[in-house]
Image (cartoon, rainbow, N blue to C red; front, side, top):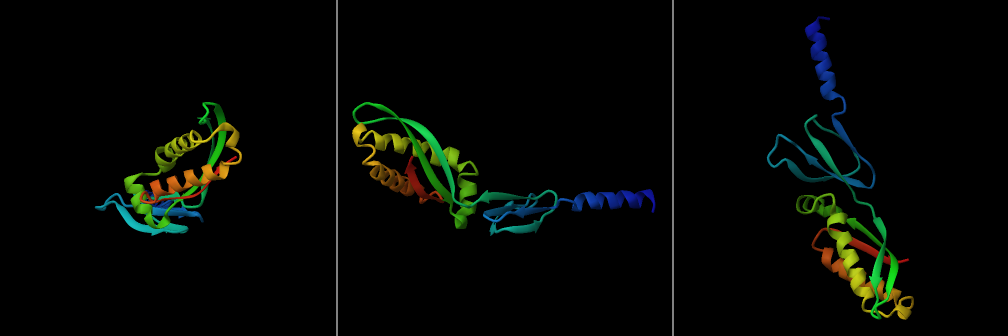
Length: 165
């Protein structure tokens, strides 16, 4: 085998190795094709292996239910500072993954859900007296959840649950 043939075989091997993307169960992807216009396809790919040219890639989103727990310092109606541990459970709308990616992007929790969640929790706690917090926690949870659901139903995100721990 001549040196030119070896070079061609090596170049072909380098192009073919790793030219694909695996999408794990619980995830979905959008194919980005660099040499197309538009480059980002609207087809949503489920779990599996998808061959790609080396210059293309698969943008993968976790579409399973995810949760974030945080401690928020809130002020009650009677002006007492209370540390509250709260959890929000959410997932992206798989059918609207293209819109989520193009309008919001992969940092949707940090940019949208997190700040809105903190604001709504603080606002709802400020409507209740300190001594009533434990008995009214389910009311606070349902109010925050319904407001979050209303905020994000047109933003391709589904709020599953809000919990005060």
